[in-house]
Length: 187
Image (cartoon, rainbow, N blue to C red; front, side, top):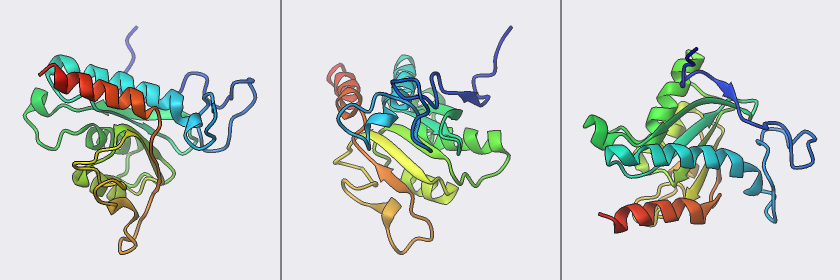
C-alpha cells in the first residue's frame, strides 16, 4: 500500500503536551521547555528539518517547510528547496509548501494555517506567505543577509499591507543554522 506524501495527515502526537493532555489551542504539541512561545513548535520544526535534509541529495540549500491546517496539528503539505533539482528560481521550500497546501485545500487562501520553515523567509517567500493569508509563520534560523521577517526587512509585518501574519522566530534556531553552516562549509 502506498500513501500520497502530499495528503494532509495528523502530526505524530499532535494535540497533546508532554503530560499527554491536550496542548494549547492552535499550537502543536511539543516539549515547551523554558520557552512557552517557541517550545510548542519544536516537533513541527523537526519535520521541517527532515524536509531540509531531503534537499541535500539534489545539491540544494537545506531549507525545509511545513504548512499546518487551521487545527494546528494536521500537516497539509511540506517542501524543501528544489532550485538546483528543477532549475526553477522560485522553487524555495516555502513557495512549494504553500502551493501544495493550496492544492490540498482547493483554494489559494490559507487562513488559519501556519507555515513552519527552517530559515527566515526571503522577500519572495515573505510575499507569497502574505498573499496566501496564512495566520502565522514560524521560523528557525535568522537570515541576516536576506531575511524578510524581521532580520534585514520586515515585509510580513509591514503596516501598509492588508495582511500581517504573526511571526515566531528562533525555533530550534541552532539546529537549523547548523544544517546550513555545515552545507556551506562543505562546498
